[in-house]
Length: 138
Image 1 (cartoon, helix red, strand yellow):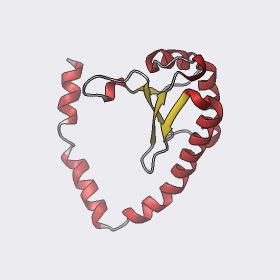
Image 2: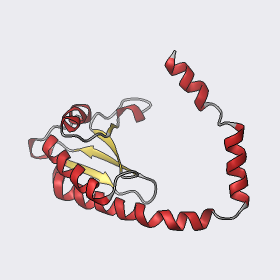
Image 3: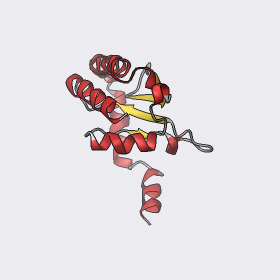
């Protein structure tokens, strides 16, 4: 029942929200707003990339995003480390860090070694701390 309700709510954005977005776009302020937010997000992405390399090393491969707020990553199993992101997620939670395993993003044949990491809401210090905690969860 909850799944069905969620699907219905995702099927259509509210008319009010659409009207607000349309009005905002007519004000020609989007480019200025994007300029303001791009710098901190780019900085966070850079810190996450460096922290992943430093803390997880060969145990993870990832694509640094050219935009957006997420890293798509894959556990390699290097150095005898595990390569199942679901198992890694459970250990990460024990270390106080959460991420989304990648399997639900696949339509068919999910890759259980994949995961998605977000840098959208955490500051630089929290990102560095989180990546160090992920190392402990390996």
